[in-house]
Image (cartoon, rainbow, N blue to C red):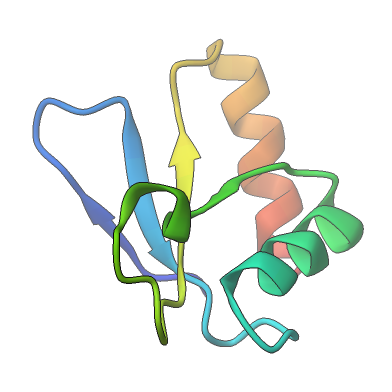
Length: 77
């Protein structure tokens, strides 16, 4: 249910986390961690103006079995 934007040549995606509980992207990534056990970085860490930002950065430089496990966890949201 999270829409992600693939950035060509990158090892991460930015996903829209606006549907998650929380007042801002920082609270929303905490919600994601609590519900799935998946840690991600709020996109505010990469922008000078983070107001109304509802994105999280997911790194996918992981082993295939770890990514498969993460996908199954995210499906339960």
